[in-house]
Length: 461
Length: 98
View 1 (spheres, rainbow over the protein chains, first blue to last red):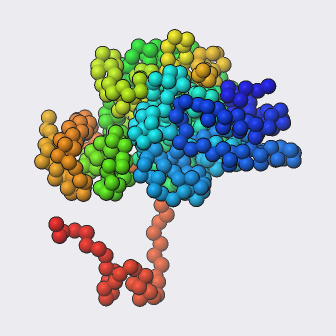
View 2 (view 1 turned 45 degrees about the vertical axis):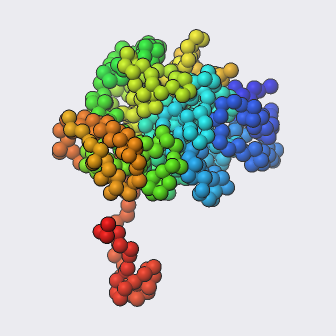
View 3 (view 1 turned 30 degrees about the vertical axis):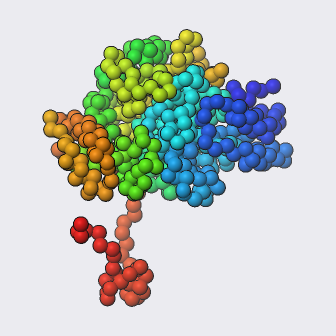
């Protein structure tokens, strides 16, 4: 009998397709696990519609028709994705005043079309502005590995739900690290694809020039299938690429042949706790790489990403900042307010630097295919903890979990965060970074590491 | 290093129509000074010959070329606006007055 809580999406779909299990039983088991969970990862549970959808999958199977590649697989999405009939709250109080969404987001519709069963929406930092998912309105998401610790953010619910075995796959968004940071702290896989590779249509955006959507999972093959299903042009998201999809699932077992792999030094090799650095070295050793590369001026890239985020985010919410500032989460309001007062010349200088930096990094990828760097400077901190000490320097928790993620999403590179586990320590992630549209290379490296037993994402008990 | 003072924050907040308490003005003076430090990091680098980008990755063909198409009924266009004055669209006053 399949263990629904620990099986990956592909295993569940195979069982449903072969009628070894019924999709309604899989869905009911997920709903029961969510109801019994203390992680605070869900803001909305869609039990009734999930069971209806699952029954439809079972009917399709019974008729001998194709129910889709993710037949009967329960999934959930960060609550900034539109779900038809549900208000998209984006972690806020303010958006509760909006009417319910009239249609599913592009990505939600694509997964449903493949037979996956939507069971609910997941807790996040307000308007995706944060790295901790300690939401003033909806509470803190708990880390499944240690309930007293944060899950990371802003897609904290998306990571905790997968790491805690509530659903095998989930969707999140990443502006400065919001998929990779919680993936690292919760010990699972998180893929932030190339900017513009996946349609964001129907997702409540935060910062248009930096926003990506992506997936969480516990196996490489699950990450690959979700990514493959979501690829494709969509005119309703003007930045979504018209490049033809490049399917990754058929490529993940190709091994490391021909891949040049190096560790990022300089900025990415300092300013982290020893376990973060050790994690990168452990991956490098497993891949047999000793090469080092430098991404120039990464600290400035982080500064520029910070400015662009504050400006674009505050512009989006300016009206509410003017008329109902008291309704924001105090933690996000402060930064939105500050962003609303930044001079235009600072913003334009940040965009100018972005062009410069992108050209320099592109040159680095002429000699390397995949770069390794820490995902977070340390493992999960305590819920409510305001300051942490990283490499001997005391700093605020909230803005600093993204020091290694921000300079990379800033120029839209595809990145997979892979989890390292150990018996007596909390999990931590390592970023695998490639040139734009080279997701398949990341997944090949991930699959190799998974097969070697170096990375793993077992459900936290 | 130049710093931002409270008076500047007060002025900018007013221009942005943000209603800040004196405590918040003090708090954002510090926050904006932090952001200014980020900006100064960027200014240390010579990027004067680089065009700014607006995307993480540049996307082409996101807009179609403008196509001029004459429309015969001028009155109907003017009448379609919420408010008009003679042969002009009338819009709410947005500048001056304060």
